[in-house]
Image (cartoon, rainbow, N blue to C red; front, side, top):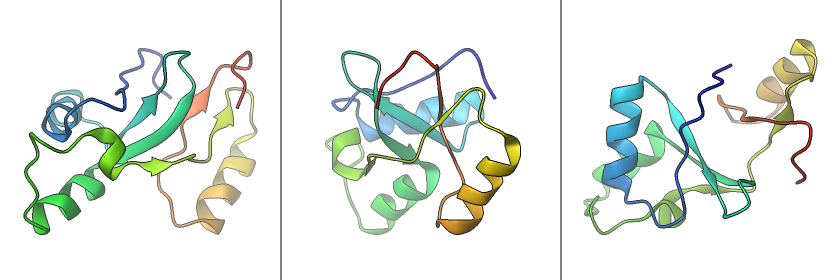
Length: 103
C-alpha cells in the first residue's frame, strides 16, 4: 500500500494520467472528487484500450475512461478479504481508503 497518494480528478487528461503511471510506476490511479472520495479508477489497460481505439489522449479525460464506483477497502481490511475481492471480480487494483472516508 502506498501512503503518498497520487490521484486524478475527473477532468485530468488521459495523457497526464499515463505520465503519472509511468513516472510513479503504478498500474492505475484512483479518480477522486472534491471531497477526496474515490469515484473511479483508471488503469494502464484503460489507457491502452483508448490508444487501440485511436482516441486522442489529450482530449480524453479521466471521466471518459474510468471505471466508476470501484471496489475500495479500508486500511484495516484483512488481506484475505482483499484477496477474495480480487479473485471474485475481474479487477487487479483495489484502492485503500482511510477509515474516516465515507463511500
